[in-house]
Image 1 (tube, rainbow, N blue to C red):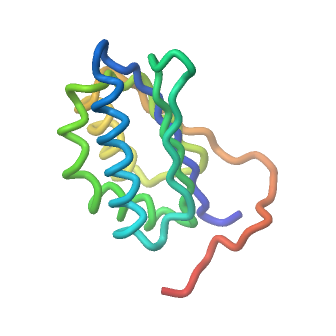
Image 2 (image 1 turned 135 degrees about the vertical axis):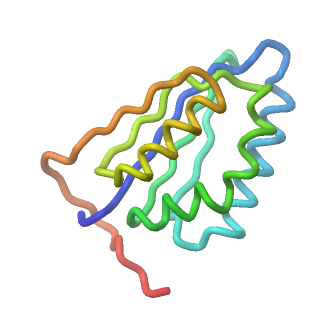
Image 3 (image 1 turned 90 degrees about the vertical axis):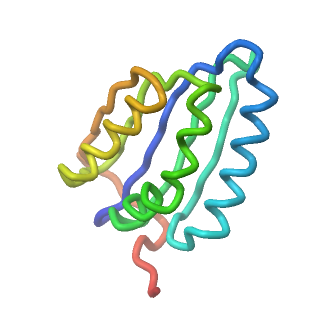
Length: 132
């Protein structure tokens, strides 16, 4: 599976902010789709009661996640008043520099921890290397 990276963050939605957050996340998803051609998937999910948001993205390699933090990073601070980030989970092994940037993002948006899950076994049925 090479350098494939899956990213999942979990946040609590601040009371009374669900509508504003849904609008902000729809705009962010559209921005990511338009400006980050390397990202394989970027999906935002809300719990049935609207109290929790999860954002899942899939990257073909570390460079894709690094680009996401660089390109979309300026759009994270306006979301901070709408959520309290609880965790970022990374499936795959980021560099130490990237891990530090993820920890900074978790602190910017809440009190979240960053957990790395190393691949033990598995496969992917999609290509993770794309010509750019």
